[in-house]
Image (cartoon, rainbow, N blue to C red; front, side, top):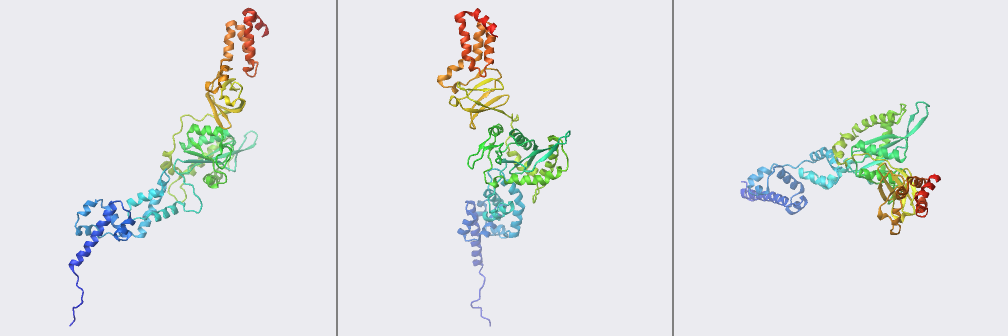
Length: 486
């Protein structure tokens, strides 16, 4: 006879007790989750594994129910709802993240977006997904940012990198057969890598600034900053900490509402993007067009433009989108709008500030004031048909609307020292008006005296002395004398 002593018999009450403990734990997990606790904290407080915690939270979110509803359910109802939940397998989780990575990479390039922000959005929609450490690892592996050297993050609309290619192209004079080398300007947007290429005659400022402007017009907007290598056309004086920007280039940047951030000296990573693009230009543009002969800049730039469109529309290696597609989707809307009018290139003239606190723009023979403390200093005048700007050692010290009247003065009273402000009353116009009051012959002679001097101020004392003769000899004798003197 077989003894039943010590034999274990399942107790229905014990089963219910165990079942109740399990359902209580589920409620506890969900309550802590709705209170904002992290999965690590929930796991520590409930004693459940992190995978178990993630499993129940994922089902809770997917069912779109509230904790109040859960707390009102019976254990049986709760078991029906959560008992069949299976954790996501490692392979499924990895495959899901890999499918999401291309879109995550695009979103990451938008200004202000961080990897942690992406992870939070990912984990909210996929509670069973990777924690931040693993997410960061897979994301950086995909984007190529997990490198032992510094990598510059390129945010949408942030920077345009510019440089000249080391190798030149050439055009041929159709009449003489003479071959002339031309420079090749390259600009690239950091985020989308949309590229602009143009052949220009020289690297001088006018050609350089014109190419920069054409690049902005090609992109259809303005980035927050332009990053040149330390080109002489862009940077007057290189410095590790505070390089000096060429005045014309700085003025161009101000017109377009952007900043100039020269690549740091001995920091090759600062310009690696555009230098890499130059290499691509050699293989994807030079190789296509260098077998033909071009007679004008227009013809070679037409060929460059056709090859450039092929480059920008080709799919990027390992990606399912092109530079153009990436630009249209991510970067285009982040660029600042273009100004209505194109930049007017400024001519320049070096002059010395005269003792009366004015400078002469020789093109118009007109005089403009500067602050009196610059008297005797050499300054630079940059001028367009509309305005002039005056600089002293790269500092803008005055600006005026351009005037076309010869031998006239444009004066800002604040520019003059109090002891010199009376000089603004001596002008060619005033002398001519006083002479006309005597006779037209006297006025014509006064104007002749002024025109024969390099600067009107040199004639002021002469004019004053001539007009004072009217008080001594009378208007008639002065008029006859002026007529003979002409």
